[in-house]
Amino acid sequence: MEFRFETTYDQKGLTAMARALRRTLRKKRSRRSHIFGWCVVALAILLIAAQRMLEEPWAFQDTLNLSVGVILVVILLTEDQVNAFFAKKKMLPGTSIARSVFTEEGYTSATEAAVTEFHYETIQQVCETADYFVLLFSRQHGQIYDKATLSGGTAEEFRTFITEKTGKPIASIK
Image (cartoon, rainbow, N blue to C red; front, side, top):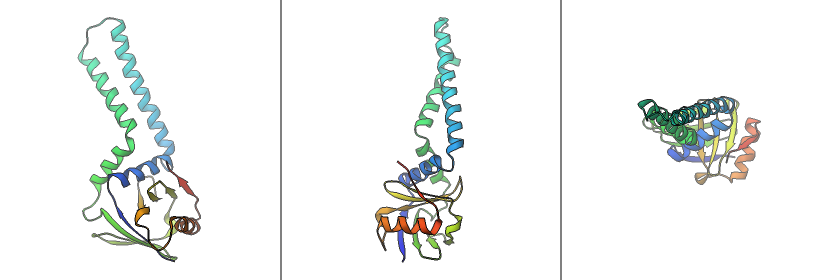
């Protein structure tokens, strides 16, 4: 059996991959970062509130505290989109469209820049979103496969195939 995908690594796809990484392989570190970030936001709010209770005039320090708090809230709420934006910036020219073929022995991914062969043993986590299958290799590396371009079988057949080949269950990412 042979499955084929043609995936465009755009903002939407990279956001799905960033979300899958954050909710699986980066889960522990992400939780710590979120706790730290929200503590800094709470501290900024407390500092501003303390200045207002003391009826001090608005100062540059208050503006700085407010700015830091707002920026952190925006980043914490849009973390996956921000990570996708920077991932897109780091991509090599010619790698934004990948054509992949999954076979019994392994799979290949072809871009304008290169053709690469992969083995199923290197996959640490398999995830599925509404639009993509996501294969994760480490906390920094993964690949996405657009379900809309799947040929050679159905999504259900691919789920069964990839679970059998990797020996890993598929994590559902909302």
